[in-house]
Length: 227
Image 1: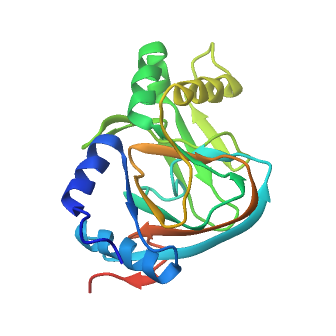
Image 2: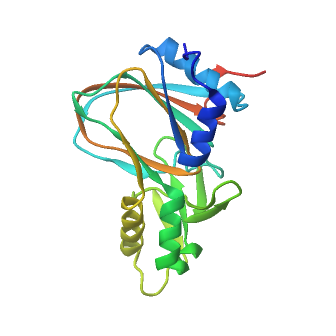
């Protein structure tokens, strides 16, 4: 269970300022899910989708992205818990989308007009988002996924910027906005403000077992928090 010493109001303040927070739970799926549900109840989520993610090594980086861009409004929060850490690598990297957006707008203010449509291979949904959104809580923030075939840049691109150049400039801004490189321990539960942060995962070796929790995911209701 979530340790009694954890102050959920303080955790929420960390999320508002830093964009992420960390709590410790027992490294088994039931305990991790109980801890994640307690946080969800504290922020007023009605349900959460739970998915076990298990894989044996990857030589690829997970593309940097805002979670669930194929919906018109991305999730506010998601959480990832570690049940078994990789032998090496596998850290989750968080990038502050607020810092990256400010830097990008200072160097290329015309990119504020760019929109990108995002799809996935496993759902028929698609949504178009501005590259820079103005969030009522965070101000200017990036909403982005690294270049994939399921992305479609809608423009308007400035005449001097190619599509490849657009992605290169955004990736460079994100590289300067690293907030944390979290190296996992079993029992870690990392909670992320998905409307402030962009995340990725580094390559890894060995088996990595994680539990992912999406709060108020319209497509996935595994655990009902409030009725």
